[in-house]
Length: 153
Image 1 (cartoon, rainbow, N blue to C red):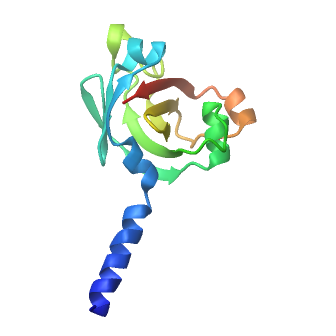
Image 2 (cartoon, rainbow, N blue to C red; image 1 turned 180 degrees about the vertical axis):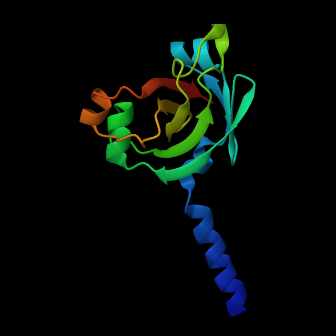
Image 3 (cartoon, helix red, strand yellow; image 1 turned 90 degrees about the vertical axis):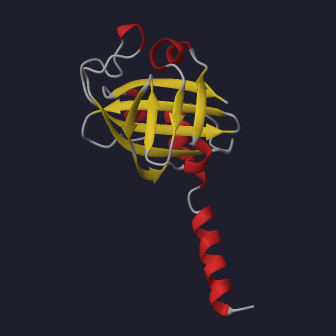
């Protein structure tokens, strides 16, 4: 086999495996929690956009979340598997969703944390320019956490 072809195949495989969390989030998710059903409705993840209540927003993946951060942010067992990511986005504080609700009161929504395992997805939205800290202490006293929503496939 040609060394160049083998090297290209190995590089392609490593790139394909380098972002498994983002791939798990892609697609359409049905609102499952009461808050998701009453505020966001169903959502759809793409490579660079998320659609919430018929509006699309650009997203940029900042970094994967560690299992300990996932446990703190989503009150899950850190050994349960799955993956999570932190995204940057901008949803204006004036944007109205279902029933006239807003995502973060009158503040701009700037951060999105996700946790997907199997056929379920949880998302937490945050306001503020400062990146959220994912420890139980920081999240317990956070005034920037806007809400956490659950979705299923």
